[in-house]
Length: 293
Image (tube, rainbow, N blue to C red):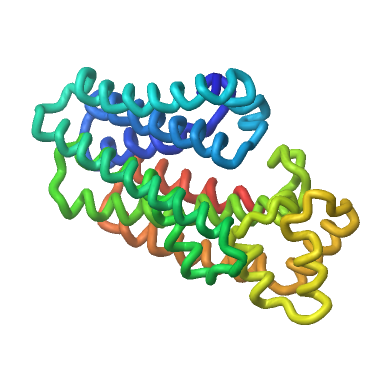
């Protein structure tokens, strides 16, 4: 249901192209790429349950369509199938297969740690700092991008230095992906995002732009934002006013500068590599950045 109704397949793309960039065969990376996408969808199914979201990719979320028990089991099956795919379908020797399984399992632990951090953010009335938020999304979101690139390097049978470089690229790309998504949640075109303008602030989500705005706002401006923050009954006019205040505080520019900083770090990680596959990976990075334009 979920896989057939959209998704960008960014993570499996990164596995395949990272392997190819390092001189490996894409056929050696297909099992790992498939496993990464299964893990990604497993996290989406369970994340939607925890957030009680009703829509994903323009269709009802798994638990809304099939009920909670089946959705939980579906996520569990995807998680199990990911490891089965690597162990049974990989064309690599047991040494590399073991490395892939180890990398993916450690990644799943970090994703769960990031999710716990996100839940604690929601439960705590305190507004976290920007640094605290970045630390959380490094685990919740960026770590699977990091693993995708690292697993591509492992599939190419390359040494630890290459794995480290690709991991760095993936981590920075993942951070960019999330904070760009955060920005779209505030100022994005509703026709593209399929969500109302200012949806994240109405839902009380402590995303980076909202964190920065609340911390920067003073007096009347702060009251305007907080009147809408977490208020499901806020009017369109109130939301529109809050979004305009956030824009006036220079938050979009500040987040944009952060995106460029992480993009420079990502590109630096790949500076010693060349070829068509590298160009395609950099094009993906540019695509993620330009989503906010």
